[in-house]
Image (cartoon, rainbow, N blue to C red):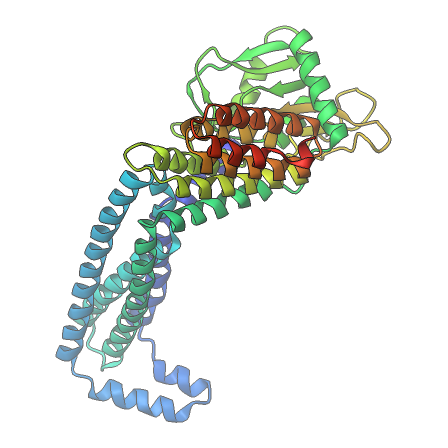
Length: 460
């Protein structure tokens, strides 16, 4: 239940309407009490020691024409509805062009743009402030204080909305630019690769491999009973439960993998009798969703970059330089994983192999040797991510020397950085793939161009 609640909360934060509705709720919580309960802005200014301003506010309230205030509020409300209509129109046009030229997955990144959401939130907040002001003015016989407060709130929010229009127009113009889109997604990809405070070292990688081999040989397979994408997994909670039950297990799919009923979900060591208890624990700590989404793994952002590169290399667009920019950003994120190591996917129990203790705290297997890995998930490092993203791009660009040259340079840079053997092996396989593609190039000069990039001392 906690896993599902956390996923629902994260989904709400990522929702396109969450920020606008939050802004409307906050503005209305300030506007309605101020207008309905007779707030006096002149007294606020006087309390702050601004007597001249307080007198000016009283003069404005006394001389304010209610009919004129209603006209202003009606104008603000109408203008904000027009602004919202323009926002939707421009958004659909820009995102339609983006999806056709760059890729449909990119829409998800631009819909969550803070500029778009802030503009909608300010426009709706100004509209409801004006509407609340009109309502308050029909329900009270006070002097001009209510009208002044209503006009002030609506005008302030409307002015902020007009400022946001400029930022929104700038963002929408960037949405149809391939270089701006690649830069935006590339930043998100690198940030996702940097996420995770605890990194897997050599000893932990060996422990993960040992646990995986042991589970492969002796573990009991737990199969999924429902279909969906693995949206998230709470390894800490799962480790705590497994440690308290004397179990050790390995989760087989990664986040965003699609799971079908009957697919192996985990292998469990130490399980005796009916595995239904383990299935129940897994269901409560692994969240299956109806679509892929951003998670703690960088594959969602990386897949978006690969999709842009594939679309750019298609015969209909034929834009190898956008594909080269995507390769640069993919290599940047993979180099982060190769340099820092993959995020830790193990959780440990204290004590000499009894399976007890606190599974939520990462152990240190190389400090004393008493840590026992009780939960492991598949590695999400460069050895997994780089081939996943670059294989299709290399296949699509196998007849373009500039693309192969850029891939060779990027992979050589990763080879200098990588310190895990599995990362280096994955890079070598990718470089062999580039070499085979270069040998098939028809132009001898193109072959020389790529071969020179492959002749890197780091790969000797």
